[in-house]
Length: 242
Image 1 (cartoon, one colour):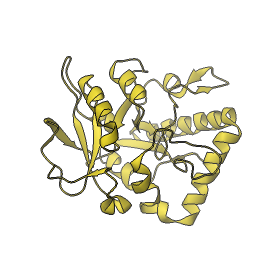
Image 2 (cartoon, helix red, strand yellow):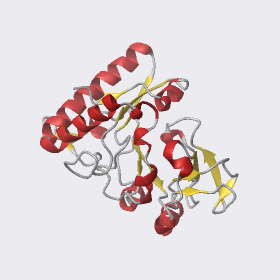
Image 3 (cartoon, rainbow, N blue to C red):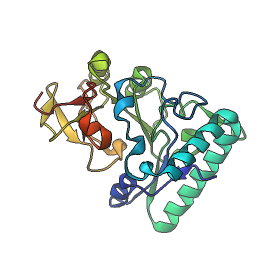
Image 4 (cartoon, rainbow, N blue to C red):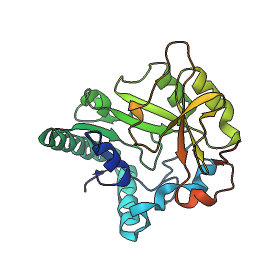
């Protein structure tokens, strides 16, 4: 079973920048029925992009459910298989003259930065130190640890605004120098919360985003509402005029 996908609207934009991206898509939240892969999810569950693009096909949903069940059934075997997929991606990128990068939480929010590949005794980030790994997360601890340099140097985390309920956490991450993604209904504003807004739809390679200089606040990564999110009124999507 191939775990990493490399063909999507997200990855094509990265290819234009000479990055070959592997993304792991699982069934979000508790959708698989065997466990929760999004333990910090809030209002985003109502506007989840799980069914956008190719995710609208039943076959794609079935494949994501199968991967999720495999993760919970035998985590060690899953990590071994994922490691092999990462090796294959790196080899393919080399053949194509491209730079590999990996997003392990395409539709999940698991702590892959702490999970060990049993046969190697190391995390994937440590096993592939020249490969950028990146995630979005709603775990404020994960985001703050990343902003404070407590993760592997090739692992980049963007904290996600969920609604007004986690805006204090957003502020804490920004103060620490981390970036925060915010979903806007229409056009992206030039600034939000008095901070510059970077266009997060130009590509999905968040590790390339501008980072705060020492002692400076982070940036807002602006994303336009897509799919179900266009009609979201839960508080997850921000009206651009705000």
